[in-house]
Image (cartoon, rainbow, N blue to C red):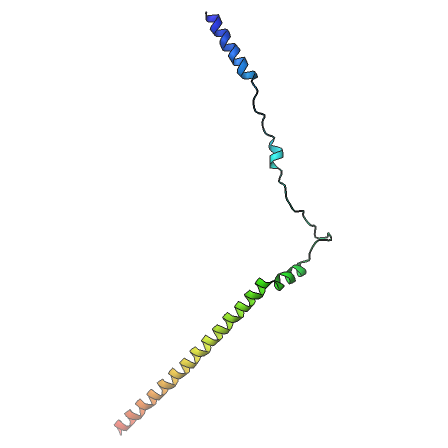
Length: 111
């Protein structure tokens, strides 16, 4: 009886060892990246020089809009600074008048 059980264990281990297993995936093929574009060498006919690329970017609508926005902001800042300068001049003039009025009143009192 022991031999039958032992033989059964050995046969089942052989059956499991010989069963079809899933093949191991080839990792070398999975690591290859596929690009939908090709690299353009700087000397190839499709290459764009840095200056031309800069001109293309500068002519874009987004770039032009950003320039307009910057100009608007600069004009607004200038307008605000001019208003502040006018207000400061008015305050200084008012303070001078008050000091002159105080000086005249103190001079008349002392005489």
